[in-house]
Image (cartoon, rainbow, N blue to C red; front, side, top):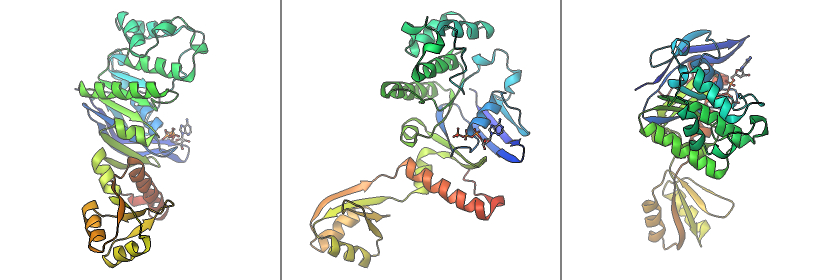
Length: 311
Ligand SMILES: Nc1ncnc2c1ncn2[C@@H]1O[C@H](COP(=O)(O)OP(=O)(O)OP(=O)(O)O)[C@@H](O)[C@H]1O
């Protein structure tokens, strides 16, 4: 089983450190979500993994080897970094045939990946006539062509329709379940929460978190209970008296921080306050991510040398 190993990886453009002393591993058997604000260094890291950019220092390896040392690299690493990479005048099938031939991949794989990505009926069309979503599917088909142990996709859902988004989610999970290493960058938090088991989060080129999804959400959010009552004012008074912190949303519901529904239900009952709604608000990946990146941005402006690493 193969992993991606990034070790003290640094890329400097001029005076900017696009990637800054980054160390993490993408383990086989799970989907790793690669998150970070625009310009955090995700694409640059991925480009260095597949040898499209040269590190200023440090290493990025696949199964212990540099990408350039791999024979027939598409058979080891499938990558989608730029769905516009295929020549516009070329037919989709010919594009894949060329890639298969140059990587000594059996020609039958071309038909298989066209079918897998839903492109069979447009295989003879020129790439220049493709929609954004079709180009994205072709990029994914190219990544899958060599039946690789490692899959690395930059924003795989870009341009995909709702059916396509479910399809790629299912495919990535299946690949991981087969023991492959899967790394996907994304800005779509709800989608990442459904797809990834593990997260690597960057901020300004540095590692902010390398942690299982559940642990990440737990570490950066509080549980909240949402309550609607007919006696809002009295309920709030009793909450405060019992030591709870609560804010009211614009629908009049109270959001009680760090509370359990049973405690809040019991409190309301003790004081004879009718409860119309009582719900556990599951914290989201988006909440956790925004909290972490906001904290990190604040921290970097004050103490740039000692950015917290949650590894
Ligand atoms: N070829 C280049 N020359 C100069 N600077 C570059 C180059 N490529 C990337 N950068 C800079 O490196 C930093 C990291 O960019 P990168 O594209 O890796 O971020 P990203 O996390 O993938 O962002 P996004 O979420 O917007 O795709 C940015 O500040 C970017 O401007």
